[in-house]
Length: 130
Image (cartoon, rainbow, N blue to C red; front, side, top):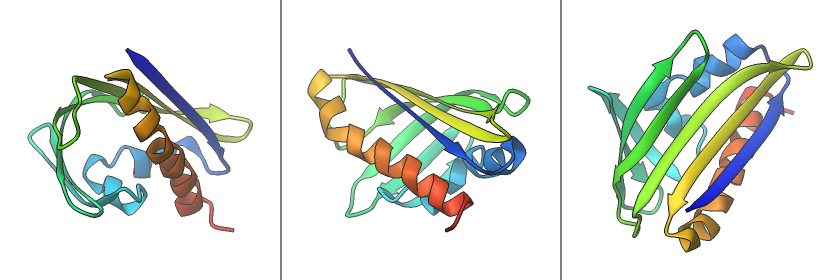
């Protein structure tokens, strides 16, 4: 199983960053690969930019620790396993966002890693415009 780990520092308070990251149904506002998103009954539904649907089961959502986990349960991609964690912590007067994903088959990590990198850069641009 492959592992992707991305972190990014953002010059905003952890509460400000969590207000965006922790808004499960609004991931499409900052993740370019997602055209539309919604959240209901513990499930996030995402329409990928360019077509295709993702269904993600959200678990261990903890606003106090500013973290949650999710697992892709339905995808047009040939995934055998996808489990991810997102968290926001305090760092150097701002925030650090960490996004860790375990994925199988391993070659899907190679294909998906640019999406996570672009997502982190987009999140920072969304919260910390230049």
